Amino acid sequence: MTDAIRTELLSDASVERFKAKLLKRLHRASVDTGRIRKLEGEGANMVESIAQGMRSAALLARLQETEGELERLKAAARVVDVKAIMAAIPVAVANYRKWAAGLGTAPIDIEQGREIIREMASHIPVRPGADGVPVAELALNEAMPLGLAAGSDIGVVAGA
Image (tube, rainbow, N blue to C red; front, side, top):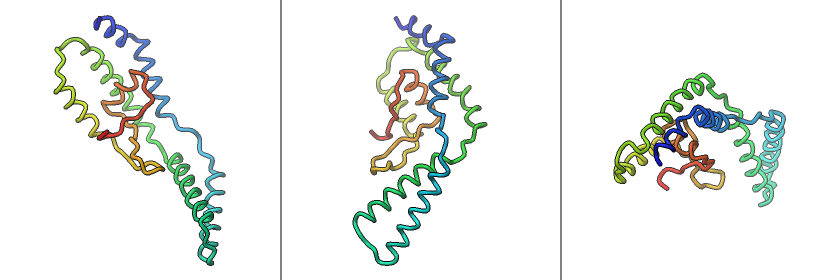
């Protein structure tokens, strides 16, 4: 049974699906610079209103909402190091192939598996989400091939 799974996972079609999913996860939507400028202007106006003594719960909530949206858009606008990504793809594919080739070749050691997962999870950077809940930053590490190969779109939160 594991031979058939290993053969399928090592097929060129499976590796191409893995690379396509990897590239899809790395693709960033284009940034609306006009929206960024508009939000910056709105935020400045609200700060000025607050500075002049106009304090209301609605105004403060709107300022927080505007600042959150502005932060999200600016984060999306950050430059991506395409060379680093392109260099990382062959490494990710090699790790995928190594993982798939090893299926069924050794006895299962649950404790060793737990240690491997702990080691991989320790390399996943985590940042606070908009709602305060920790969110894993997807990175090109050993954990990605496992999740992507399984078709998962769910990020892992370290320590969960």
